Amino acid sequence: MKSNSRSFKAVDLLYILMMILPIVAAIVIKVLTNPLSEGIDIAGADIYFTLQMPIHNLPITESQVNSAFVMISILGLCLFLTHGICSGKLTARHHIAEWIVEKVKAIVDGNMGAYFSGFAPFVTAILALSALSSLLSLFGLYPPTSDVNIVGGWAILVFILITYYKMKCGPIQYIKDMSDPVLLMPLNLISEVATPISMAFRHYGNVLSGAVISVLVATGLQGLSSMLLGFLPGFLGDIPFLQIGLPAILSIYFDVFSGCLQAYIFAMLTMLYIANGFPAEEYEKRKLKKTKKLVGGN
Image 1: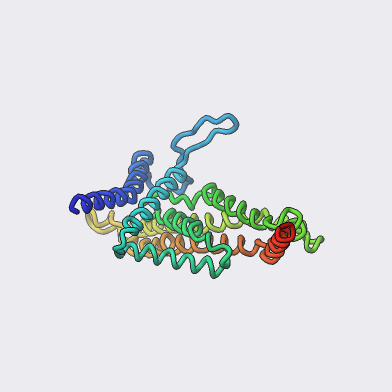
Image 2: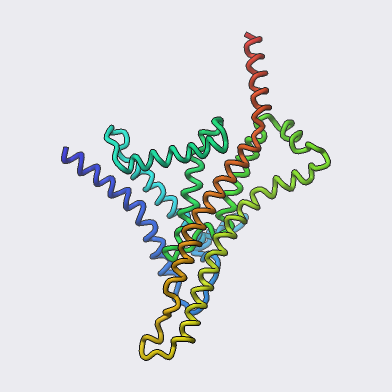
């Protein structure tokens, strides 16, 4: 029994390390690759190295590495929450995992319908990856959601799913829906292309703008503190007193609240675009016709 308990705790420790060590590794890489700089330093993701490819070279950037670390941390969190859930003895973390599943499933069923109930894991993954990526800024790391290439990749994946479910009744029905009415077909085509672009830029723009505003305000308060309180004797004149408080409040809003809000909005748009693009009535009619043909053939 003691052996089983020790092995259980050892596995728990492994999962906890899976959650923590990737973030620590990202911080270490950030410190080693970014020398200290004075003043405002607003730039995109650093390029660590470039892979030589036949058509176009592939740069490995800070946002890609941090995104991979976030996925490893999420995997560790999922394994930790569900570890021992089949043993029959449910603990607090198992109830947390069950609560998350029930809440997301309720959101998916409420916005997409019972047909899409299997989308709950996908929506959970979007929420977790987006929210935790934005929260990396709390550790001084570059959030992957501030890189349009990362968010654009998510939007393209969602666009593929939207198109797939729109074509559930075949390409002919898809073209009919696109050309209804015929005069608006060019606008409908533009709307199709604009969907992933708007999703990517909405998410990316809100996260990036929040980070830029926080840096500008913090730097401005540092300069203002030096100008107004620089006359204080000794080391007191070097302390940026005006930076105390307000940057932390802004960080709570832009990094925590806004980051989680953008994750929720992206997930909601994903659900609504897929569900609204699915021709449910036509699909049911198509299934009924196939069923009648099979029955009649037998």
